[in-house]
Length: 214
Image (cartoon, rainbow, N blue to C red; front, side, top):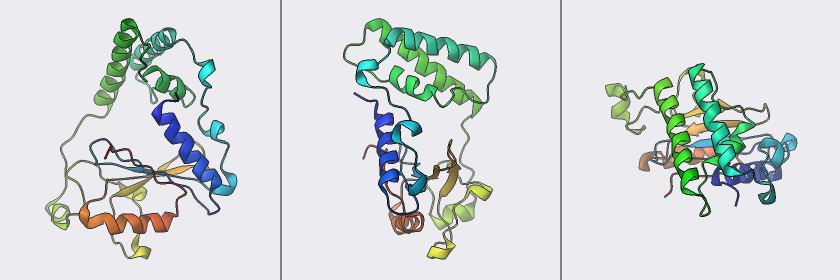
């Protein structure tokens, strides 16, 4: 019963390691269909799956109540210190386990889990306050972006001019490990489906995984 996000990371890593090309990619769209992401890694140097995201064996699961309480305490302490990062890389496995519901969860566990997720959401809302989309009239007229604030900035923007695409709503995101990188992109619009697949041809991913629920 591996949490879904860990299954995604494991699948993307296995696909990257199995690829005989030069890169691997996972495509993830946000729940509202406005964002997506690619994970790409050189296949020859792709690390073992458990090195990318160590997934604990089912029989070695930590007791959930102490785990959630510990994370809740850490989140409250770190939020008070205004940290740059709320969780370190190794803690993401524990967090994914803590917020993954199970039929065996007691009422107490469900209550504390809600407190933990609320604390994390509040932290992100306070750090990155929601802004209204600031598309210019020219950008709106081109019709290549969804009406949200998912703008690719500066040097992070993906250049697809070599593929005949002057613009695509996509940005490069460096990975936690040098051999893995990501591309975040919106769920394709009807008029940008062709651009999306040209992006895929350009990056040559080992895997494409969408997370928009459709």
